[in-house]
Image (cartoon, rainbow, N blue to C red; front, side):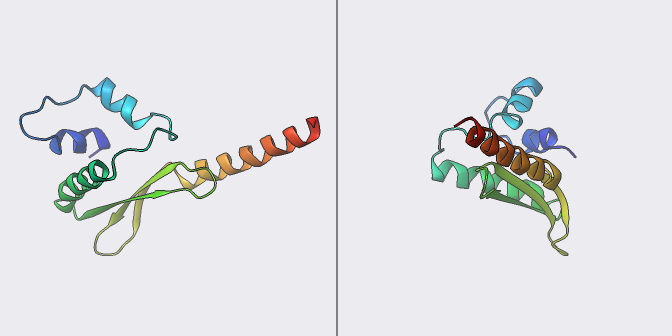
Length: 110
């Protein structure tokens, strides 16, 4: 089951389901968005956790310390084994390296 299917099952009753394009845009939106209302975020996480409970999965949201990007991890509830991480560890490593290179370029120009 992908994140789009989870979003379909977790949609609040009585509200239209978002289109696939809208869901894709929400998933790929830039990580540095304006801060959301903490209560809305907590409610969204609760909805996702209820949907994932049926699959014996746990969703964990964190923020990468260096980049500030939101990191979503899907874990097996019983074994705590990492099933999927978005963005992946490799992508985060590349982002960190690019940030360091960007810093070096600006130091050399100054």
